[in-house]
Length: 267
Image (cartoon, rainbow, N blue to C red; front, side, top):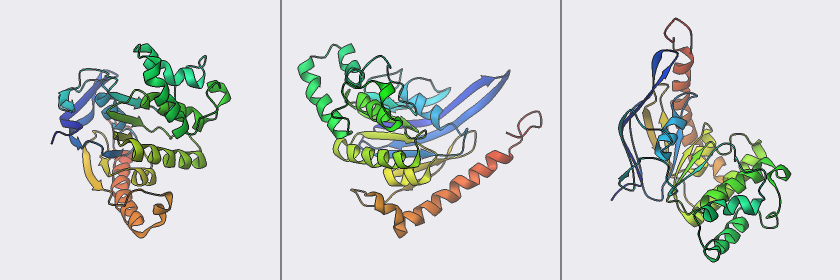
């Protein structure tokens, strides 16, 4: 069976301050169709670079990226991206932001309006259609951002620390919201995070990256039952998985913190 996302020997090199920096080195990663896959790793390990290459915003220096068996040549609406900041149009209402994509693609209103109404209900924004971003909380803005991506019905959902800027309580609510949406939609998800508990709560698998140059150190199968309520975070199996992942991430974080860069300075 063809994987939804397939990275084969993918490396990415940047030029910075007249020297070459190898950000990612020979990554092999396979994400099955309908899988919720999380990526964890120390700061600067290349998590966002990996996601940007799958999105088509950047090209790998070497290697190959396939989505549904086809090479990634650039951005594509079949791959929806949710960033840490919702980046809404401030002069558009909630409804206008969510319908921007379908309107741009000249989809008939009768085709997208029922989907928009369903998504606004699903993400808890019914009744806020005429509000502007300045009138919304951070969590509500992210809900708009998620609805705006989902209305385009992407085959793959790419999420780059989408809840990283939210307070703990709002983040917890958004995690449960995303779980409920995914359990209904079952899209393939590639989710970047630095939060171990978040990764284990949401994902089917957690891939831990090494310190730069980023490689896949380990892939952990999250064998917690679904549907997955928030209470699972107190279960013995959850804590066992958390200890396992924490040890892997901590080892790489310590390695990153003590690495000496060219010129003798610490990273």
